[in-house]
Length: 395
Image (tube, one colour):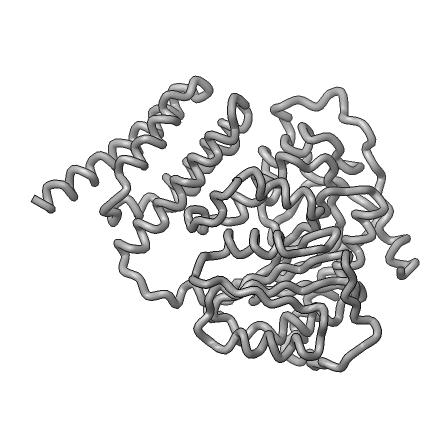
């Protein structure tokens, strides 16, 4: 391994849970700082040069395919053939070669499979999986994880990029400090490459599941693309959903659902102060999932079903945990359903009994105060109004 890189990522470890840590910290001390520096200028240059990256598929002795590679990269594909080679070029530039690259094709109808199979002929680290029908990203990521063999998992989108030699930096950080999760910075493309989220730092690595869950409740990024996650932790999160992930009920907000399960089992978590991921926010990009032509009604029914399944999942899995009920279950309902997607209510035509039953679960929860109950009740009234409108229309 590169000694300079190893010297650059030494982290002060917080071995024990702090005595003054409470379930509701008054200040958002989310992450912890090491001695690395954020080189945004260098990262910008790498992204600006991305279109001129020379694609080289020559066989190399550095390309391994071991029984247990260090990192499994999961890439879910749906009609995104024009991004595959560019993403692969940036993966190939990474100093860490002992990896496997798992493409999960979500029943694409373009030539994505042809491009991937051409790459497979020249790079034995690539594995190709294909869904029988379009099952969406939540299912596809889980399928990739179940078929992976790496010590750690990195799940990314094909239209984004991993940069700044992040694989070896994050992997060494994880191994040196026995971390279940290593997080790093994301930059996004609009209006120019900038840090996606500014974060506050505290010293050391967070140890102990309660502490990790606390920072999750109070604002930790719920993306999986900016984190190296220990494979057995990811597998446990899949077991948490049992066979439910085989259905298409969780395809909305897959990161929220995936990371909620992961955080239940993680025992050590560290932040590497390095930029490692480029998130493409270009509105002109060709996103395969947006190419599915559906009516407003079909889209509303599909989205509401997924959102309410996640709401039910959060509520049930939170069990009798007051913190999770308030910070995860209710906050998801408020932000992702009521605030962001309330428009769907005016277009749904089915599933009313299911939606009302889930809302009644929330309304009967002793952990919610009067203000939250009123908010849930107002939303329930809108569902009832829409149900009555559809019944009258059918008459």
